[in-house]
Image 1 (cartoon, helix red, strand yellow):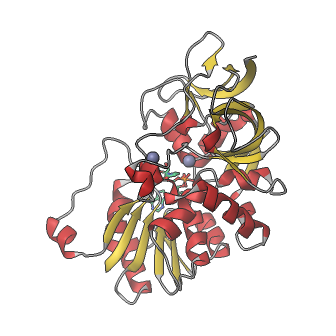
Image 2: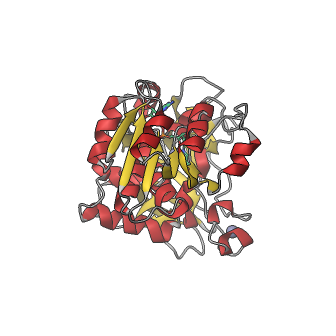
Image 3: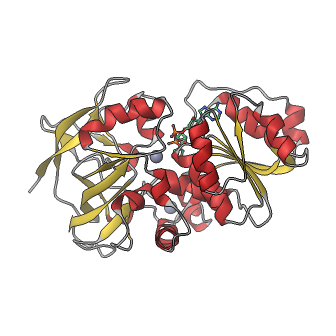
Amino acid sequence: MAQEVRGVIARTKGASVELETIVVPDPGPGEAVVKIRSCGVCHTDLHYREGGINDAFPFLLGHEAAGTVESVGEGVTEVAPGDFVVLNWRAVCGRCRACRRGRPWYCFDTHNAKQRMTLTDGTELSPALGIGAFAEKTLVAAGQCTKVDPAASPAAAGLLGCGVMAGIGAAINTGRVGRGDSVAVIGCGGVGMAAVAGSALAGAAVVIAVDLDDRKLEIARRLGATHTVNSRSQEPVEAIRALTGGHGADIVIEAVGRPETYKQAFYARDLAGTVVLVGVPTPEMRIDLPLQDVFGRGGALKSSWYGDCLPSRDFPMLIDLYQQGRLDLDAFVTETIELDGVEEAFARMRGGDVLRSVVLL
Ligand SMILES: NC(=O)c1ccc[n+]([C@@H]2O[C@H](COP(=O)([O-])OP(=O)(O)OC[C@H]3O[C@@H](n4cnc5c(N)ncnc54)[C@H](O)[C@@H]3O)[C@@H](O)[C@H]2O)c1
Ligand SMILES: [Zn+2]
Ligand SMILES: [Zn+2]
């Protein structure tokens, strides 16, 4: 029996989101219905609301979530009703060229649930990043569910579903941060802050956190930053160079998604360093770089999707680190809110006032 539940909908470009009734069908073959316990507000949700990702309105927002499996469809063996799970963006195939090369976020053959959730008038919804978890329940592919220890707090576990995984993975999986490296992270929101924590976990000797807001920089110190730079008062490229013996950082992680910070990341790295691009630009954004600089700097320019994670490997590992007290996921949660508080949470995110607002259900 299809069920009616409440969900947060972005109807048109730039309009305030509204809490509306949505219809969640029974899970079909390979699918699961998940009762959402927590869902963090990520900047990507705001990008969807602004039409910055695509125009497939109306969106059912929310994609950084943990929940309990309520029911599963035919042939599902990965999870069973009652399992506590973290949701991931895509059920990757595991067989295509991208999957076999260990880059599943470039999978050509994802098996997400068909878009079958609707408004009560039958209008088809686009679930953000294939999830749609600002809702009491959502329909996903069973392969998007990773079982984790049910003793973990839902607010903390849900963060792994996007921002924290994207940030930690950008450092560890994409950037290959290792013992003794110097790292600069430009932009310390939920994603960049996790890149700071991931760099510290990986043994970096120098971790430079860069942001416009001293409150963020203070938290970054708690999570392992050895130095902080406020770009309002210091030119960040010069400051990063000064803190790394004049060379620039071995790994620079961009977690804002703006032309000026892309450019800073490019120039703040050591000549043989790696730039990891995590911030999502909008279609009209451009930067202009002298080709001599592009050529003359060795190293690597990499983009990082979802921290190049493998959910079944990385989610349980990060939950372990959290429960051992080695990864302070609670420090990311600025506030917990209700489903009807998402629009106000977007305003606080724009104002830079929160690291993460987390909807608890
Ligand atoms: N690649 C991925 O897999 C992935 C996953 C999740 C989010 N993202 C993207 O990462 C970006 C960050 O997401 P978030 O949720 O952390 O956002 P956020 O809004 O919480 O954080 C952005 C941070 O950047 C800071 N900032 C803004 N302009 C700056 C500047 N010029 N210099 C230095 N700092 C600046 C802000 O003060 C804020 O702390 C977004 O573009 C989001 O879409 C990418
Ligand atoms: Zn996200
Ligand atoms: Zn694949």
